[in-house]
Amino acid sequence: MFKGRAWKADRFGDPETVLQIGTDIWEEPPPGSVLVKVAACGLGLPDKFMTEGRYPIVATPPVKPGQEVSGRVVSVPSGSAFRTGERVMGITLYGDGWWRGGLADYAFVQERKCLRVPDSMTDESAAGFTIGFRTAHAGLIERVPVACGQRILVLGAAGSSGAAAICLSKALGCEIFALASSEDKRRFCQSIGADHVFDYRQEGWVEAVMDATQGHGIDVIFDPVGGSTAKQALATLAPAARIALIGFASGTWLDLDAQDMVLRNYSAIGVFSGGFSAEEESQAYARLERMARDGEITTPLGNVFEFEKAGEAICLLETPGPGKTVVRVAEGSPGLFGS
Image (cartoon, rainbow, N blue to C red; front, side, top):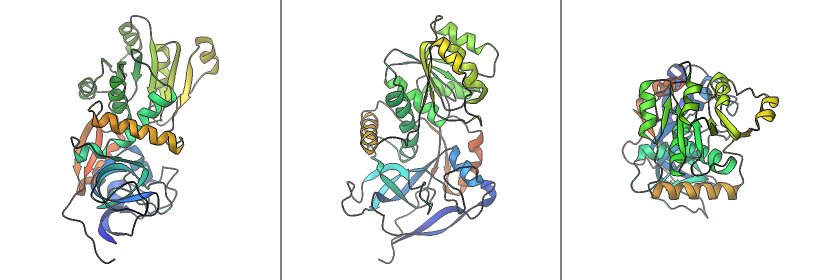
């Protein structure tokens, strides 16, 4: 049995108001999971939505946010592929009815979504690796997939999944076109591999993208944004192009016109990283782990907050800075007590 700190909200509401640090207890991990002493926790917009009561998976309080973590394994069930002491990164049991997230000293990590951390990777980078790159892998390798030399337009390119898509596309040999709203975000996109950057708030950005492709157009759009920006982006598509529907950070999904899709011969492909078989998922994580170990991809890290500032960090996710937001959790030694 382990005891430690944990962020928790007993009711839905503004994260800075309803989230509080309390004490929690972790029993031995159930089958299919490992218990990790958390070093750092990666945050995303779903953490804000769930705290506010806007996330379908979490229908009732209490809320314990934090979907992905890095740390060291402290306990495993019989038959686990992991050993105590191993440094890992992975996705927590956030989908279970007894919600228990990663903004805590300990977290249960799903074994099938758990990777060993390369020695060269920091705790903070490891905490922000799994979800972004699993989403990018699902879209760009499994569902679309892309090919070396293709032109990829990434919407919301400075965000968590968008930035991961830039890094993965670069490793795959693609030419990357990135949309971002501010100068610092566009500089960030260039620093992680974007070949061309554009301000989607400025008129004429569609024409600028087409000019940059010498009139060829975009082969694949990676869209975690939706809404009017994604609608405009359709005008950049080359013949037989595809758009990967990732998410709706704008608040609405892309509204597609079937007639336009037919007449211009492009396809829309839905991407849900949780919708794969255990075997497919294992293969995806093995590839991502190898690419990280070989230095082909690394987390596009953004702001790093201390544990006590987690509520503030979650509030800022509505309009985050560039890169992955991470909370540093590690404090002292494991709080083992009892048996």
